[in-house]
Length: 428
Image 1 (spheres, helix red, strand yellow):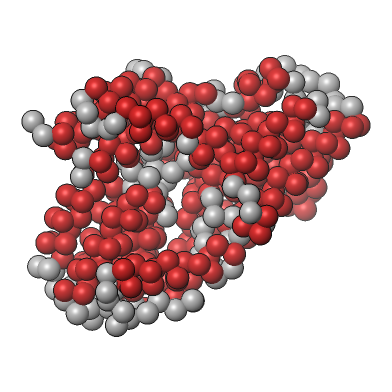
Image 2 (cartoon, rainbow, N blue to C red):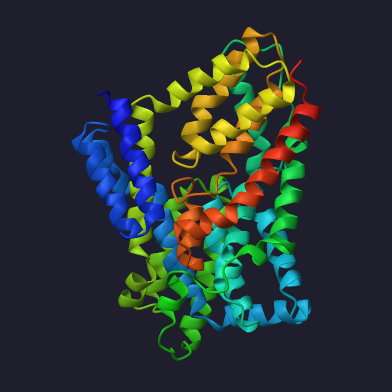
């Protein structure tokens, strides 16, 4: 039996265990990690290195920063002000937070970081309305994921250059991606997901958390108000962390350094005790993320992505309809990104799209952006992107509840993405 086959079997069993729910998700993740190592699907050193992954450090640090921010009265006062403006309407509350989230997503190229910034304030606003976090964390999460870098502002201004880099690398410079092309292609998806999150998503969300949330865990015991110094320190640290993340490139700092520094500052200034900081971290979610990195690494190392890509390239040659071709280029990367990190899938499939178009003397811009859009819209499983396990921890979701909420927006995204992009950027 080849390692590719073994890898696919272990991946399938891992996903089954997540859905089955008899084992804790963190336990399943670690068991699958050991299985990948013992069967030689991934190098032991590579697997161990995932424990020091910068995204993992950033993600867990943001929970501590958010917990410190939650200890301040600033969050409650901000939430009360938002609710006053919204006049108690959950739709209006979501409108305000979705708008701010979309703006942040244009300057911070990390859905996980944006979620970490927005989640504490949205949870506090919903507490004022007596709405459980399970109703709002999934809508917030899909906006954080699907609207990243859509507009040519901040990180979005580099998208066209990256795509042109793929064209140059594959010696197909007949076509050039313009600065505004990614925005032109993805703007309808931004509007669609924003509208869905504001008006519809909460209707399909569970009324109560399915599993214990990090909010419930950190607020089990009523805590006394912070002293004036710690109160000011709490929101100053949070605001400085947010600003540093927005201007991260100008500062020349890595995002994990900013988040970890903020987490440590929360403890040093006394906003959180060491015990409160440790309790704020959902360790099961950290193990889940590390296990997901291992699965994605194993699938990449054994050639699963390339194998699927080769089949895809052969299939599209037999398709004459541009919308069918666009559908294949969207749905295959979209599904594969649910079990592999999106950056890995982009790296595999964008070159395949370019080479396939080159062979048919076709315009590659639409299919390149379709692949990119599919990979940046991965929200159906915790293996897809770090923002998903963060939302699961904050909203109290298990895998079944995430998948259930994901089906409708995923279908809508596919229809709108393929229909719009293949019309605006025709294949032939």
